[in-house]
Each structure stands twice: as structure tokens, then as C-alpha cells.
Amino acid sequence: MSRVEAAARALVGVRFRLHGRDAVHGLDCVGLVALATGREAPTGYGWRSGDEGRVAALLDRVFERGGEVPGAVLLMQAGPAQLHLAIRVSDGIVHADAGLRRVAWRPGVPPWPVLGYWKGEG
Image (cartoon, rainbow, N blue to C red; front, side, top):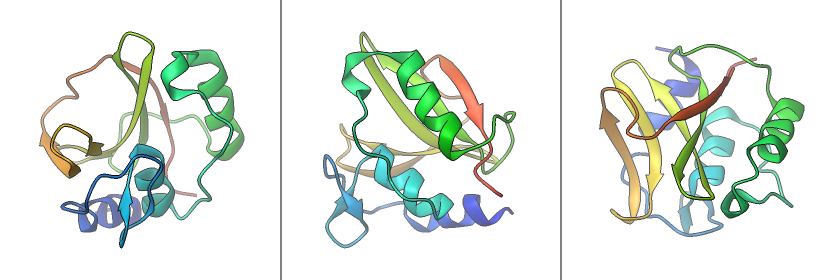
């Protein structure tokens, strides 16, 4: 199991909090990816703007492009003008689920269109 996959799995159950950046107070999808990968959470992004190009360019500055492997960072289109991040794990994804109000593991393929993959390791 990759370091990023193990870190993401360890965060399952943490409370969801919009703009959350630590496991004590809660996490959103950006905070989850930052903690799982050991990277600093970006600021000044527009996830709800639906600007895929802007968000992908931001991710390109932090991560290398990669494939669908455990530990990868996924950018997904969760709804109209709503982007979402997750960590690919060997049997699904780990993501900050606003509906469940916690970080959750979801088995199988992501339920939303994947717009790109970035290497969570390295």
C-alpha cells in the first residue's frame, strides 16, 4: 500500500468541514488531499466556479500528472460547476463527503466523471 493511500485511509471517519485543514476540526476535499499527500493546501482556488482549467493548472503546480493508481489525486466533476478531489485507493476512493459529513471510503469506480489524475507520491 502506498504512503498516500495509507494516509487517506487513516483519515476515514474524520468530520467534514468546509475549508477544513486538520483532522481535529474537520476536512474538506482539499484538506484531505493536503494531509494525505503531505503537501500544503492551496488557496485562491475556485472549486465551485467549475473552472476545470484553472484548478488543473493549480494541481499541475503541486503534483505531476499521473495515472489511475492507488495514491493518485483525482479531480472530478461532482456536479454543475462543482469540482471535487479524492484519493484513489486500491479498492475505490477516499474523499470528504459533504452529504455524509465525514471523510469516507467509497468502493469501486468514482461516481463522478474524472477530469484528471495526479501523482500523490513524490
